[in-house]
Image (tube, rainbow, N blue to C red; front, top):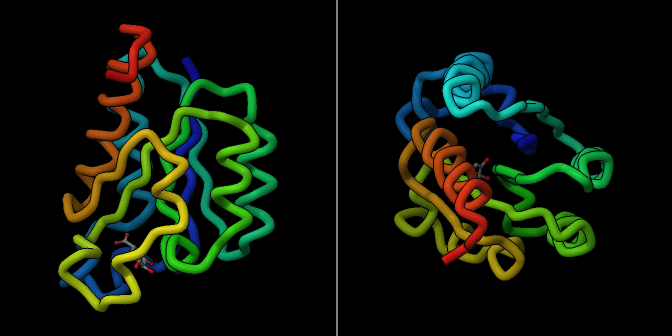
Length: 147
Ligand code: DHK
């Protein structure tokens, strides 16, 4: 079982970026936590980050035969058509993750272009959202049902 964990713009700044909103963990800290959990579950993980929309699309396409995608598209969540198109084109079961609870924030963060194309969305649980997403995909992939 192979899961791609993909992070969008400015998430490379985690740790120092508005820690009261995004938490004190760096992206490298989150990667370690995700890799540890993945190892417990027997999941192979690829972990990537880019500040560039096209690179995020390329990475999704390159993993089109993988079993799951966990994506925090960050600011592109609220602007991108190409990223949800890539998710739809590949058909990878996807969990959308946001560290912050976007619904408690500015109105422009309330809309996600990705949400119609993903299995489900986790927002507001900080780094734990990534771990929960991994557990959820593992359950779906081992049980063979999305219900
Ligand atoms: C991360 C960002 O960079 C913002 O642009 C989104 C998301 C929220 C997060 O909570 O992880 O609005």
